[in-house]
Length: 424
Image 1 (cartoon, rainbow, N blue to C red):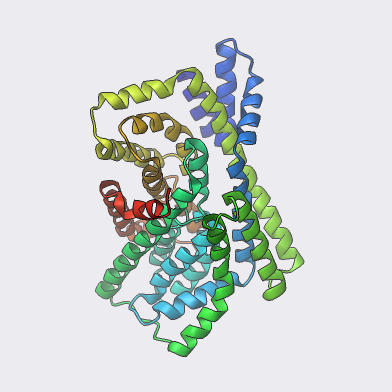
Image 2: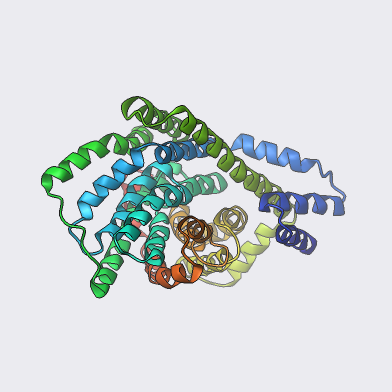
């Protein structure tokens, strides 16, 4: 295992994508123990074949790309702007509201940040906000993406732990707005202290008109979640229906997706799906190594030896995820760490749906923290703000998010009442 770790880290440092580094380490391990290295391909193939729920991932990516390449995003922004225009710092709060709505369609923090988020960031800068603050708000609000269903991270978590996707989505329906309220409150305090301008109240007539224009886009969420909880679709089927609805809305209703944009949508969907697939393949390969070495049992014994209760154990694991998030992307952390700690959590009676929400909180924080936070890097490149500008403005929001996560760890009833109400 030490050799495997060295190979994975070394290959990554020399520029090999992480998924391929995992596969390389796994093949070398099998050669060292005298096993057939070709079994890696069998493990990867069978793991993908058994994970039906993962077929939803390219559908959600496609839906997000359709919205970013058409006028749907602009209509959501117009509605959010009308709602929060009367408040100081209203444009920054628009960022949170649009992310909350958009996340209910895309399920991806990166799709939110690079599409809708970039639109709202530009609007804030044009209104006189500093580029660093506007970018920091967009990064913080984009963290709602993995929390609000449909969540790509939650789909992976469900596939790894055999948790009920509907229960995870139901808990996310509470956790997402919970975090959004905290962020809006934090922005409000900062806006008052810095005397940010209020864009101005547009009036009830304009608000109603913006709401009506946004209703067809918002119906994507209704189609998606209504289909799942109504028992009409599985999550995977619901993702396909939502993608088809968003496409029809853009092409026939709004007429805002031309052939070139449609081609760009397909190309970007394929690129992102391939990148995620490579990481998944590598994680399945390294998971095979972990299983052969029985590391899961060793980690379970270690966790049991801590003599910690469910809440204390969750805090310990969340702390480990936060530290790893400083150096690794969220998806590899989930795919490697979660299978190791789940048996120990089950042994002390932790609800895996509750832990899934908390783990998603921790993973998304890693997406925004330097030096390798993917949200930080992407938004820095797109907006031109320096790392120092962004980090100085971002840390209050990170503290708010970490505080919210700690509250959810200590009080699981905050998010678990809805799954229980729905019978999960």
